[in-house]
Image (tube, rainbow, N blue to C red):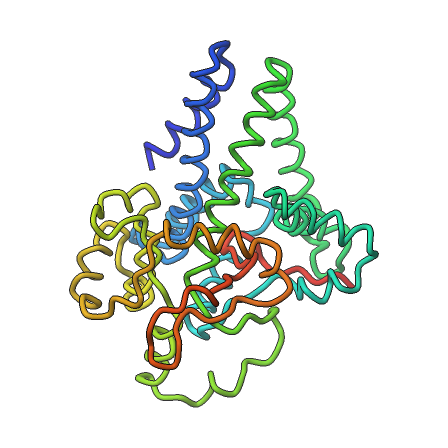
Length: 326
């Protein structure tokens, strides 16, 4: 936590430097601190770092302020994420494919074109929807004052930074986009769950099943996309979030114990291990098509890996909740 907060503050100083190499280091450091703030927020959602939820909520809110997800209440994000574990479902913001199909051609072409160019237009669209939800949806109206206060504070801070250096603001934007891509990359290939908007009925095959059947389904549709199997210390860069099968088996296990738990549980299930290097091609190849076609399948009928059909999910981040406009 100290590293994340210190890196965030130190990176701002590096963005303000005149030296281009220091700027580059600042972008890398800022990106890493933003990514870690997301994964630390995840730890706080599970109530792991502190003994009481009061302190976990405080820590989670601090991390959400760093990565810009503070417009939604931490407890609401936590509730949605825990529901993902309990119901074994990826909750999406809204039906992206259907929304794009019904959108004007020009807007659809722009959004998909930006995604093809590696600009995460849909991620920004969902975050903008969330920011303005209190002014557009009746059930969010009580959050208007809170949202305006957050907007005022964050806008003022960025304005101060811009007054010192326009370059620093642009580099901050580069780091933020990099954070979105890293989180997207990891989230895209960790599950082949059903994806549903909040409020839709849970599929029948999730109901009235035994704990053992539920566990088998959960593990069969969960994948550990680690940075490296050979050099496990590299996985610390992402707070061991790639050990996702182990996390779903024991949701209260701290991030620093996940490698040991993973070795104990899954040594003989190699098909669940997918290195990030193996998925780079899929992330590039299906960056637009996955938006419209779905996530595909990662294993064949014989339970062998079949990465050629593993397209990946889109926008299933635990940092954004579903918002439905009337």
